[in-house]
Each structure stands twice: as C-alpha cells, then as structure tokens.
Length: 446
Length: 177
Image 1 (spheres, rainbow over the protein chains, first blue to last red):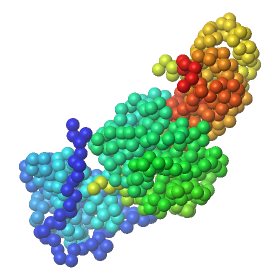
Image 2: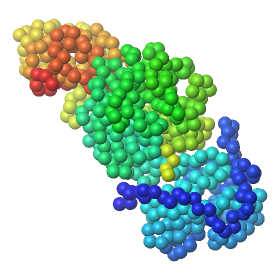
Image 3: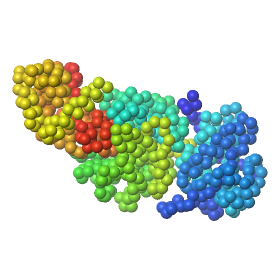
Image 4: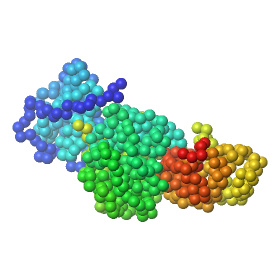
C-alpha cells in the first residue's frame, strides 16, 4: 500500500505568497525570535500551532494531521515547547485574516505558526506562515508546498524544517530518512533485514528479507543508494542497493575472504571499506563505476570503520595497532595515519560530522559503552550517553543530532534506536515496531 | 535449531568440565585425550561412553574430538587447551580425508560490530593456520567470521561471553573446495 511508494519529488519550489508579504522582510537574525543552539542549558521556545485550516472539505482531516506532525518535529528537538491548543484564547479560522497578536501574547506564545491545506484529487497544497508574536510581525514570508497525498508527511516536515531554520538560523533535518537493520527474535536466533523509514519512525519499508544476515547500511550522499554488508553469498560481502527500485548488486572487491564496513565518499563515486585476508583486516577504497580498488592501509592490526571527511580529503578510521581500538586520521589516499584518540578505554566506529568539525564515536570504558564526540584533532572529547551497550553513531544532516543503537542487557536483551543532541541533551527513543540497530541518517531530501 | 540445541548442550557440558577441573582436558578427561592421540586404530566406541561410537562420524568429531575452541577477551592467541583440541582435529581430519571444514570465528557481544567481525576473522584464521601447520591441506579449509552475530549463550555475563568467544570447525562432506 502507501508505505511502498513515495512521491519522487515534492514540488519544493518555495513559492512566496504574494499576499501580505511585507516589504523589507524580517530575518531571523534581526528579530528577538531566535534560538541560538549553544552548549548551555536552554529554555525551550514556547510556540502555538493551531490546527491548519482546511481550505476545502477534502482537506479536513489532513489539515490537522499535518499541523500535528509539524508540532511533533519542533517539540521533538527539545528546543521548542508547544502551548497546547486547550490553552489557546484565539483561533485561526482563515489563513489570510490578520493575526490578533494580543491573543497569542496573552498565553506567552513567542512564535505562532499558521497554515492551510487544500486537497484536489491526489494533489495536496500546504501553506504556512510564521509570526513573531512579541514583535507583532511575520518572520519571513509565507511558503507553499505542493505534493501528493502519499507525501503529506514530507510536506509537514518541510514546514517544520522552514520554521526551525528561520528561528535557529541553522539547516534543519526533519525531511530526512534513516536506513537501519530491523531485528526480530532472541539473541541466538536473531533475524535481520534492511529497512528504511522517515527520521521520526514513520513510513517503514523493508528493503531485504531476513534470509541472510545484513549489517550496517550507509546512505549515498544524495540518499538514492545504500551500501551494506550481507551474508547472502555465504560470506560477508558489500552490496549496493538502489532505494527506489530495491535492486541490488554485490560490489566485487576482488581480494579477500570478506569485505565489510563500507561508506561512500562525499561525491558518491568512491567506496571506502574493509577487506579481511588471511585473518588480517585493512582499509581499501574503490571507484564504483570502474571497479578499480586501492589498498590504503597495510598493517598486521585491525583497520576498519572508515569514514570520509566532508571535503573528501581525509578518512577517519579505527585501528588496534597500539594494542587496543583507537581512532586515526589519514589522507584519503592512504599514507601514515595520525592517532587522535588518547583517552582511557577503546574507541571505535568513528563518523565524521557533516560540518567537518567533529568525529562521533563509540567508546568502551570500564564495562560501559558510550556515544561521544571529539574535535578532529582529538580535543574536546565529550561523552553524550552511557549504557550497557550503545553503538554506531550517525549524524543528522545538519550535524546537531546523533542517532545510535542501544542494546539492553541479558538473555532477553533487544536493540532499539535512540537519538541525542550533540550537546548531550534530549536523549530519546526513535519508535520502531521491532528491534532496530545500525542506523544511518540520510541527507536532507530534495 | 537442532544444531543450536546441540551446540548449547555441548557448551554446557564443556563448562561443567571447566568448572570441575580447571581445564577441559585436565584430570579424568585426559583419558579421552590419550585415546584421541592414538588416532583411528586406537579409538573405538567403548572407550568414549555416552558419545557417538563411530570415530569416523562428524558427531564423534563434534563431541569427542571437540569441534570448538575458546578465546580470552579480545584475544586470538591459541591457549594450550585450544592447541590440544586442535591437535585432535588434525588427527581426525587426516584420518578422514573425505571431509573438508569451515572454521567459524565468533566474538562476544562486548565490542563494536565491525571490530568483532575482524576479531572473529582473526580467530578463525589462527585456527586454520594451526591446522595447516600441523598438516591439514589448506585446500580442505576455509574461514568465515560471524563477529557477534551468532552467539550461542545469551546471558550478559562472563559465563556466556566465554562460550561465545569461539572458533568452531564445521565439517562438510567433500575433500576440498
């Protein structure tokens, strides 16, 4: 049914509404309505979002569903606090009527989001406006998104993305997806299959069946392809899957008993991965179209979990050449690596942040697992989580949030996805219908 | 299912042995080892009560020779116990040339997924190298790592972890691959 199809594109053309577009449009920076995302404790910004107005009878239910998803996105960040509709004094019955700022000021809403939805056949049109209540002005211009019924949640995410960006002056991440490993069954009989979903857990679609073990999927930079490791052929091999067609092919990595831990280069042309030969694991890179591969490390130790810097010039990876797992950075062409992690314990699964300034990692210390971040020179290490087993961080497209897998202890232990702000705040579970592991966050969709 | 059930039973048996005499082949178990050392002509069903009586059967290999060895935390070096078991595997494989084997390397859950895959490969390779050095043809052997994907004991305690840090020699019909 609908979960198997997605609109290929949403008309993301940001059509500025012609009406009431004030000259000299306010920018987020100039007004008081602004969240600066900092390390310190912040007070969430209170906002009101009355149910969007249906512009025709067919839009009745969708209008309120859509505004609910916008609210869930914003409130879910921990940066915004919704003032419940039960507390509202004013109401929005028409998208074009002037806003009665006093009604919203009275309930201490600093931001007001209004919207309208029209449905014509399969076509959905969403309009929204963002108001700075205390300065009594619209913040930015109204925007309109067009899409199909199946894509209504994406339109809601796009509205939330626009609100987030206007208020924080940062790129957003709501219109994004997560590819992961869906898990079922006890630890000694666990079945795994690849799955993809919206960042908030909606619209789950399974990409493989559970006949073979599948591990660690990774998105291409444009989000249209996925690299992963599968035992389909009997031994671990890297596969390349097209998300739209769900067609897949094995990547012929040539040498080695097994190949695994693949990741795309930022231009999507190259894969960096690990090959094990004669019990020794090293890092290779391969041009996807030519199939030509180059060995990047040659050490008797384990070298794995490579991840490119966003400019494609360097690779961070883990190695136990010092005796235990630690993080290293080398040129994307190989060469002598530089160790960046020096703390107590073991460091693995490094992932370069999309902003380029940080590396997220899994740390094992004193029998506990942590998700942490450090600057790329190894300074400023900060552990964001602690549990029996936290593993495998992935960055939101804007580099503000990290998703990872948390496995619970004991014979009935199960894995689930969690997200946490890079500040360490707002730890929460990402809803999935069964167990889940190895998440990888897509780029923002277009 | 049945393989797993067997594996769990076998593991339980091994752990009892480990508890009672500090080593799988110490004390009374040494008799089994001595019989094994005599190879094909010395072994017979009567010498190994309670296990498969045909010394040329895979079941005998599994249960009497011992199809698996265990590793210390984050290690792939072979312990003396492991070498003892592998010596028995060498003798069995050399007496039964119609079998080949896949050596499976495994890790416990206390590690990251990629590292454990690589660690399992190290363990499987350590076993394969030992078997080859002792005279088993490399054409009859191959390795695979399951990392932490296929635990046989599921508690989150050292008693279970110890059983999961293993390399299992799985027989297959056919003299080579």
